[in-house]
Image (cartoon, rainbow, N blue to C red; front, side, top):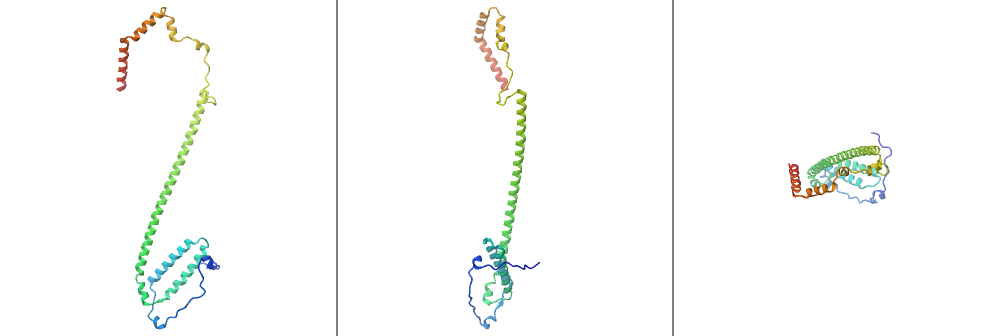
Length: 232
C-alpha cells in the first residue's frame, strides 16, 4: 500500500473542541518502587484497545465536518498508545484491578455479537418491507394499466353506440320523426268497436261482468295460482 505523502493537516484546538494544555506536571517515582512493577497483560491491552475504538466511533458519529482528518489523528494516537502499552509497566495492585478484564471483554464480545444479530434481523425485516412495497407498487401499476384498457374499451363502445343510434354531442338520441298519419290513426280497440253495431249495450254488459262476484273470484283464483307457481 502506498504511503500517504500528504497526511491531513493538524487540527487546531478550535476545530477539535479540545483545550490545549501548555504545561504538564511530571512526577518522578523512585526506582525501588518500580522494580516490582509488571507489564500490562494481553487481555488488559485488548480491553483498552476496545475502549479506544468505541470512543473513536462515538467522536466520529458526533463530528459534523472534517471526519477524515479527525479519524486520521485519532488512529495515529491509538497506534502510539497501543505501542506504549506493550512496554508499559504498572504497580502490582493496579495489575490486580484489571484481573477481571478478560471476563469483561468476553461480556462485551457477547454483547457485540447480540448487537450484530439484532442488526441482521432488522435488516431482514427492512428487506421484507422493501420487497412488499415493491410488490404493492407493481400491483398498483398493473391495476392502473387494466383501468386504462377498460377506459379505452368503454370509450370505444360509447363511440360505436353513438354511431349506431345517431346520438349527437349533447347525448340526445336522433330518431326519425313518425309520420302524421300514424299519430292520427285509430287504435286497435277503436277499430274493433267500430265494427260492432250496438257498442253501448255491449260496454255495459262488459262492465257488469267485470264487477261481478264470479269475475272477482276468478281473478283471485288466478292470482293465488301465480303465487304458488312463483313459490315453487
